[in-house]
Image (cartoon, rainbow, N blue to C red; front, top):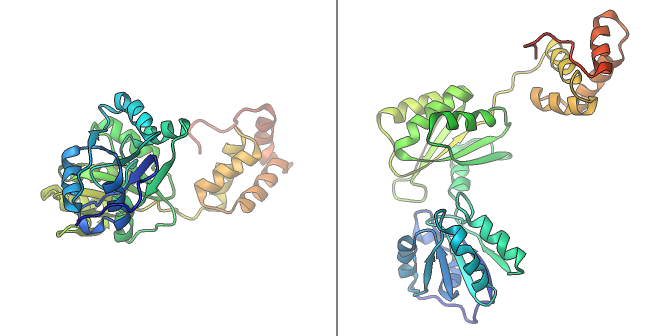
Length: 305
């Protein structure tokens, strides 16, 4: 396949998505841009060389990755002011789990035109395979390898009411699934691997069942783990009063309402109405809470919600 642009590409930085496994997913536009630029900044030039051979393009390349980005970036920005420069990762969309955002930032600051050539992205592809809600999702990339840092990262998103997406390598998948189950509970989840390749597979289940499945037979290839959001148990009136009173004791009413509404999954109007009742009720049951609110301190025993 020999592709070239009919007219020279204008100077600028071209963010070009490449296939995540199936070379047929490279768009004609992406192929034409890669064939038409003056220079390609590649995460691994050996990987990109195979792609260029596939489209019959001989374009100079320079490595651009985590270890050399700070040193190489100024030269790429300068080159992009007068020539067309492409940025590619080994697979998928650049800037997703790689250092490209700093190059885009610096190009914009220097007045360099930045163009995106969209295409494959493993995180998005996995979401389409997992069968979990996609109206809200949070991409987490790769979790830290060390257990303590990994647990901290998981805890930070434990209460995020969205589907979570993680990248992982095959050998680490079982350990990561077990850690997710221990910190998040046995949520619905899916493991997608080898996306767009011959042995593409998406297995759904729960975090515990998937950890057991892959604990004995680690998956091969690149893996995306998709985890459902937290299961929200309907709050009782007592739950609302306890959590809302505690929140009101340390924050203004509007802030407390927003916090409690998100935590309990209740409409803000409902929480706000109850907050007004708690704040203004004259009975003895609420006297201590009102005094604490006026003093800006908490009257609730240590450890209560």
